Structures are given as C-alpha cells and as structure tokens.
Image (cartoon, rainbow, N blue to C red; front, side, top):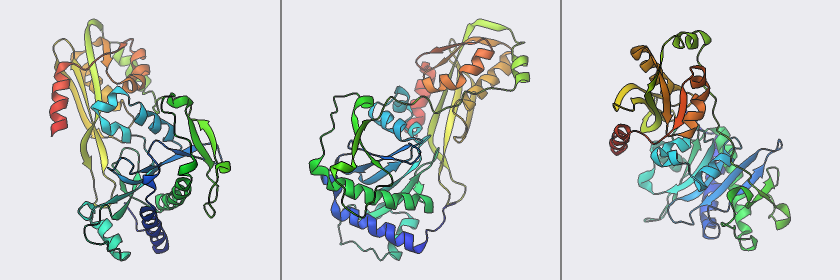
Length: 347
C-alpha cells in the first residue's frame, strides 16, 4: 500500500522537480550520458536525464542491484526482450521523475498538484511532475518515503551533473559498452556546491552481470518419483514463460503487480500439454517447470528433450532437467506458440 509522504519531504521534492523542469537539463544532456554513483560498499547506482529525444522528459535512477544489468539490457537488448518487453521490469529497483500533461495525471497526482498549488499556464507542455518507483515485478507506481528521499537527492545530483555538460567529453558509442568510460562520483559528493571535472572519475561499466536468477529444484522425493518414469527420446517439449500486459491490483493504493504466462508444447504435434498463469513475483522458470510437471503427470513418461527460446529460462531450469536426465536445447518457439503469443499481445 502506498503511504502519504511527510509534508516537508513532499514540498521539497515538488520544488526540486519544478527547478529541474525550469533548468531543462535535457537540452544539454542525452540519456546515454549516464552518471554512476558509487556507494560506500562499492555498489554503483546510476541516473540518466530524459528529454533529449523529445519523448519523455524527466529523470530515472536505478539501484546498484539492477543498474549494470539495466544499462546492458537497454543498449544491447536480449532477443527475449523484443517478445516480452515487460521482462525488463522483472528486477528493476529505482525511481523516476517524469513531466506529463494534465490528462496523464491520476487521482493521486492531481491531489498532490492541488496540495502544492501547482497551476501551470494554459497549454503548457509536460508541465506536471509525477513521481514513480520501480519495484521488481510491478509496473511503475507512486513513490514511498524511501523512494522520495532517494529521488530528491538524485534530482539535485542531476542538476549539478548537467551544469558540467559543456565540459564533458562525448560518449564514444563505437566502444563496446563494457569498456566505454562512464562518469563516476561518490554518492557522498555534496550538491551544496557546483561540481568540477576533478570530482568525476571515468571508469568502464564492465561485463554484463550473469543472470539474476536462481536455479530451480524440486524436492528430492519428487525427483526420485519422476525418475521412475520411462524416458522417451522421441518426445520433445518446448517451454515458454513470458510477462503478460495484464496486472493485478488488489487495492487502488497497491502497486500493480505483473503476471506471467507459461506453456508447455509438444513439438511434433504442436499441442499444448501444460499451461499456467500466475503472479510474476515468483522465480522465473517456476511456472514453465510446473507446466512440464503437468505433462509428466499425464503422459507418464519423461521427454528426451526440453527446448527453450529464452536463455534465462534455460539457465533457471538447467539443474532441474539435469536431475531428470532430460537434454536441454535452445531453439525458436513452435509456430503454435508464436501465433498464440501474437494474438495475446494484441489483446
């Protein structure tokens, strides 16, 4: 449930947002000019200023748990991202300031603008600030106090960062992302004074982190029981697990939670032999393997091969399959699933 912000914090955040809009830092910075903020334990958060592309105006910042992975995914999207764009939200943790039109405000935004006495001139474009938090497996939703304090500090950092725009080197986009120098500052660097180039160090982001996933495993007694089933080398099952556009919101103040669809398809017949739709706040691969278990319980045999199109799903399922002596293969989705998925995406 979203809780109201302390009044003083809300005023400070709103004032900082209006100062950010008045400064129009997007005229001088692009969203590829990322600022990395180094935490005391060595973790690296990141922020970027939005608006240079004239589509979304504002600021986004991400926590160290997801910052590097997010940068890699946005610059070099994995194949599964194009089929299931919402998968990008799976591990996101951060906050966002965005400037929108009056018709884009929801009831919480309207109430906040009213409390702040904010009345932009008629026909002002992107004149209303809204504040959102990124939470794992949720759509962006209103900030809590912890996000608001983080966002307030990041707005002030972004303004100091943008003041240096004319002196900063252009990012060398021809360099691979892992070796491209990115600007780093200590998170403790004060914003009470202007920053100088001496405050900034230039360091590469490094290689993309490994999958932020756990390998899924069933209880030993269940593995033992399934291993009693005969192995049919002529059967191949394809597993898919993807994010749906639908969300679940139990209360109107709750963050909208994402859902995932999983299917098991027998490759030769193109028949669906298992299906699950559940909340997305469970480890990736859980639903797909539930679908495989549905097949095991009905067919009374183990398939010789299980196929995946999503490498992350394959990684999460690899240990489970190895214990059942089932071969894991990466391949394109069966035509039956591809056609069904296109219909689902249009809904």
